[in-house]
Length: 543
Image (cartoon, rainbow, N blue to C red; front, side, top):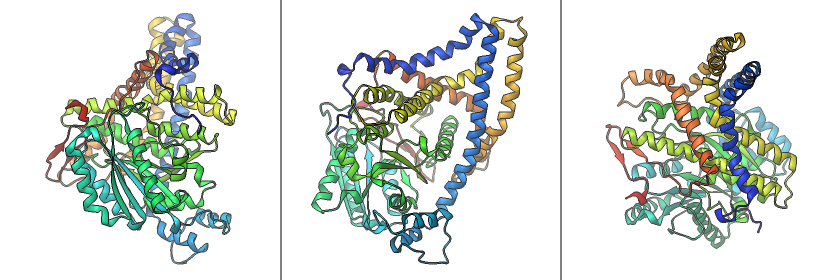
């Protein structure tokens, strides 16, 4: 088997350390660049800042256009009768002329022309739900959402992956749920992930990998071809839309080379969006928008949170990494190098509904949100992994494609850290250094005019965020709906505190080898219809 695992800290070479330092070094340099350029030449500083603002402005317009397109696609796909489309694939022809079908469905039937590698009826869906110490109020609705899918439950295998370190209470909770629901699935089992396995960090990767290996044993005992098994990994609060499994089956049957791909649904942080505090709602709805926009850029789609992949591919690469806290995003690169670049992620415009961050108490919620975003921004650690595997180890990955992906990832993480800060503050640096320079004093005025035009794009984004919200619960009065609109005045606060600062935290840690070697479990509180809040200790090691 190819060596695709992340090297241990003690085994990281000088070039590996260089690329670990690179994103943070670039971010800190760019942060001070307006000041440096202003000290060198005010005209150069003004030109550079204005050029950056224009680039950002053009990107924001494109972002808004994709937001509308992504939202329309999501709504269209949620309305489709995917079971009917799958029946057409079975018969290789239109089975019922009365049904409404999109034009691309006819194109798929024509393109395949009977040359199907798989038919929907051949597929088995496996669902791995990873849990640590989440309460029954969080975990059980996820199982119920799987059962309520527009799909045959007897073709679904349920695996609940739980941590031994969570203790006896968590273990009993998981086994009670398996016992309660097992007869409604083809098969259901609970898999315990032992604590303190040498070579593993405390994280989701080791947990789902253990579950994947047990799932492999079950499939072998039942003589089920792993090529026909699609494995979806879910967090404890991830609830698939009822169309998810049918749409996933369809996509798997029609895409080119389905065994060399992952399938990425839309993460939508709306389960408890009406219960979350204001700042968390801004972060959550902003994340919803980001992934809706991303669905319109399939060449940039990467694994995030809940995603699906053929079981045979997972077996081939020994499942997920057990040495990173960002096992989802890293899994793309792990797969990319294992299959010599012959690997892609297909976006699926069907939601997986998730929780916005909500803990027991406002301050704990603020802290939990930062830890979650810090974990996401720690994906900057993949930059060194890509450079090391791509350029310093023998491989067959196309170097042009590798280089393009590398620089896109690097630019994305640097922009995550420094982009918003430059937009908000860079234009004010030259006039502070050169108060008598005409160009320097004109810059904030010009930038403010550009930003006013950009407000139109922001309004489009806000609209998309609002229309993706679930209905307001009866326990909240109408003024809560107004707050959903008014909350956007806090966008500068959240984009700095939970965007820039989280990214700088992660990248600076990489500079000084302060690695995140433990998955910070996000505390999950639930609110009942009566308004009663239930919370459990997120991290069992903190008890």
